[in-house]
Every structure is written in C-alpha cells, then in structure tokens.
Image 1 (cartoon, rainbow, N blue to C red):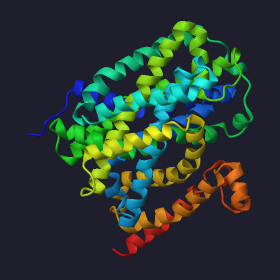
Image 2: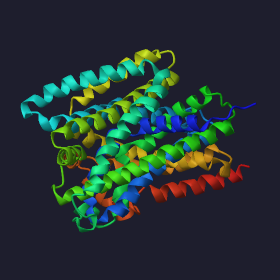
Image 3: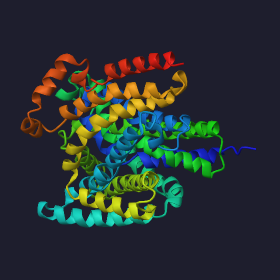
Image 4: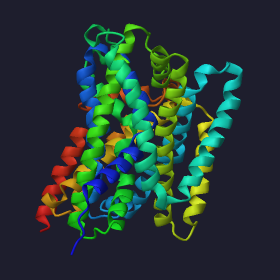
Length: 446
C-alpha cells in the first residue's frame, strides 16, 4: 500500500522548499520596491507576488505534474540541443554566475559593510566570502542532511529573526504608506513594474531546479506513484508559497513606511540596514546580520546541491558530484568578490532572456494534457518566444554597452512594432501565436 505523508512531513518539506527559495533577492528587492512604489505599493506588490510567488509555485507544480525527473528532460520536448542549452544557461544563472555569489555579497553588504571603512571593504569581503563558501561547501558535500538542516534548524532561526523586526515595524511604523511619494518607475504601470521586479528573485527559474530536490525527498519518504508525488509536491508548495507571500507583503510595507524617515536607499540591503538600525540601534546590526546571513546561506547550500546534482546527470562521465560542488563553490567565491552592484547589473539582461522561456515552459508542462504533451506544441511555442526574449535581453543591456554596440535602434524599432515591448512583455503575443500554430498542427497530425 502506498505510504501517505503525515502533516508533520508536509510541513517539513514545505519548510525546506521555503528555505531553498527564500534568500538574498527575496529580502532586498521587496524592501526596495516598497521604498520606490510608496503609495502605489498595493498594485506593485500584486505584480511582485505573481512572479516571485505564483510562478515559482507553478514551477514546482509543473515538475510534479510533468512526471519528468529534471528540467533537461522537460525541455527536451523542444529538442535535445535546446534542452542542453537552456538547462546549462538556467543553472549557471541561478548558480555560480549570479545567484550563489549574490547570497554572499548581500549578506556582507547589508549586514557588515555599513560598519566598515571604505578602504576595508574589499579585504573584508574577501574574508567574509571565504568563510561563507567554506561553510556552504561543508553542507553541500552532505546533501542527505539538507532536509534536516534547512527545514529544522536554519528556517526557524531565520523566521524568528525576521518576525522580531516585523513586529517592531508594524507596531511603530515610520510613516503612512498612503502618504509616501511614488518614484517615477512606479507612477504608471506599477503592477507590471512589480511583475518585472519579481524576476530579480530568480525563483521561477529556481523552481525548475528545486523541483527535483522536492520530488526526490518525497520519494525518499516512501511515496512512489507519480500522481501521489504530484499531489504531495503541490500540497507542500502551498505551505511555503503562502509563507513567502506574507513575508513579501510585510517587507514591501516596511520598505514603504521607512520613507517617512529615510530617503530611497541605493539598494534594499542598505535600506534593511537603516531600518534595523532605526528600531534596534547597535543591537540592530546583530539582528540584521542573523536574518540576512541565515537566509542567504541556506539558499546557497540548496543551489550548490541542486546544480551539482544536475551537472552529474547531464555529464555523468566528466566529474563526480563532489567535484562539481568544489568547482561551483570556487567559481561562486570568485564572482562574489566583484561586488553586489556588478552582479545585479549583469544579471538583469540574462533574466529578461531566461524568464519568458521559463514561464512558457512551466505553463506548457502544467497544461500538457490539453495537447497530449505533443512536442510540436513545445517547439512552436518556444520557437516564437525565443527571438523576442532575446530582444528583451538586448534592451536590458547597460546603456553604455548598448551605445558601444549600437543597439539603441533595435530597442526603438521593437517599441514601435512589438506589442507590450515597452513594459518588458514583448514575448507574450508571439508565444501565444506560436502555441496556437503548434496546437493546430499537433491536431492535424493526429
């Protein structure tokens, strides 16, 4: 008889899922969104929740319903070449090139940098990231302990620390949200600006990677039937996503009310430091250091584990799991020492390219029954989405680089002829057209 998970096991899996998702970007970007959106925080928050909570949940559901064991297997419905390209690009983005280094730099810049002299920053960043990644390496080499340490130990520490800050912020707000000025970014189309801001969390991308960890954990607990695995994946995901939504809304509120006392900060990490200092004084530094470092550390461990396991699957004869752990931890350490602002600026164009492709793949996997999981539908939909996702990539490049490469005219033409391009959604109409063509062709072949 198939084993059924207990409520306690659902909570622990959901807690692990939350711990894997909630890291660096999940703390700093909602705070910054609140500061910038001000009185328009509600529509901006709704947009953020779609991409930072809704899409990651759908990604987990997609991996559960698709009966696929990995992102590579899912993307191979398009073609094996595309599957290899997209899997490597996604994993390197949420891994050693951007997301993992960001976990260390956010911890350092928000929790420690404000209390250091300018000439000390580079050396102290090097020392901090060295310690951070040595600890990450230790846990990542022991992946079987990930449920215990993330679900049972690190999450409670993080949640208690964050709740401590939230109680003070709600009981003694620094201002009224309705009276906070709105920055130009959020004066028009606040919902879509918040939607795109959710890309920075990278959680929809991570959901396609973490799905294999969740499915594997459920299997290890004795659940083997695909339908039951999908059910348990969804139930566990509901718990973690509701928790994330509540925290996001709280962080946006805290960021918005902080404008009653502070100016808009350079980034959310600086804002979090100022807010913590305001409520707790010198003790705030300790509270903030615990919140940030624990949140980022647990995400780093989860990412290193997931990425190393995937590369073992993709290239089983190249390196063993432990070798990939050493490799990706080492690369992450080197990239982290470039600093937070550099990492963020280079990641935005890449996310504008990868996210549309991830959204389309997630939706196709969820509704695959409607078109009998036919490869034709996947190929046409992705085929139409890909060039317009690349246009978003070009448009999001740093201004100086676009000028050097003479790409300004590309953006001007795209804004003129591509629907929704000006709000970062130029891929939507083409992907719908591609889906419809693929759907009709798949029916004709039957």
